[in-house]
Length: 172
Image 1: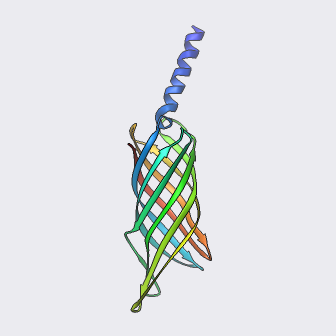
Image 2: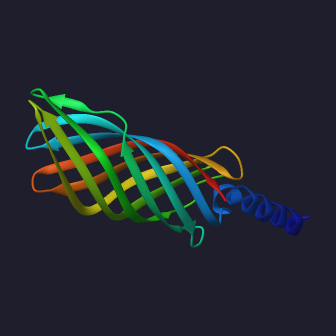
Image 3: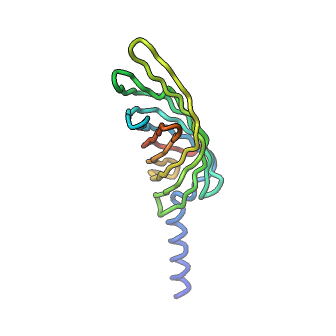
């Protein structure tokens, strides 16, 4: 009887741990990110539409590439500021924490192109930097996750670009 109970507990524990951790292979996703761009104490908030494509190496690591395009702008002192686009490559490391919750850390490289226009003139500039953040996947089915994430995309030359993103991803 004792051995049966132990075997049952092991099977139940393995079954509960496989919800998020069973994901493998390639995945894709889309989301919306609210970016805060702070340049020497003055800030603007803009949004991007983001796409991602990645692959799981095992239950704890995945790699992905992302591409985002600006969908809103903000102005400061009469100058419109927007993220024209960004792209990057990242490594995610996480640990399944239950049946449907997968917290992770993410790090990689991003390149961001900003554009500012106002008073009859416009200018754009691209910068790249090491990026890092924290996030979590919440499984809604075996193949679909809702993702919530905070990222520091850029911290260079007095400019910080942070983002809070919400999206979904699905296994291929």
